[in-house]
Length: 123
Figure 1 (cartoon, one colour):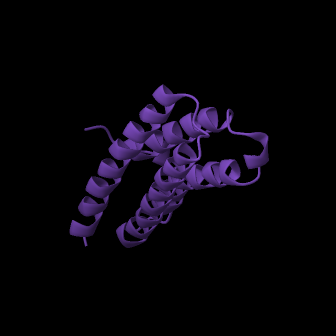
Figure 2 (cartoon, one colour):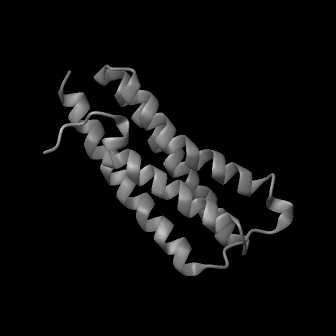
């Protein structure tokens, strides 16, 4: 296994960035009246995922990192919920992109859970 020199080396952070970029792509097609509502909320929640992973990594303790992973997981579930709402409201026009984000969210959730468990067993 390679040595982690930076939070950018963490696969959970990289996957979080992927969720952000896909989310931004998807919300481009939302109605204009959603620009400052659901669209903005989705962007903010998605950005929170890799941001909290980075912040937790920077705290230099497993306990603190674990706490920030919990926050990142919460943001991930927030994004998933908001995407479901957007789908129900008929805002999703690219079904393939929507499904890809859901897959990325599921993978990210599993990765965060596994990583978090390793941190919790270390202390």
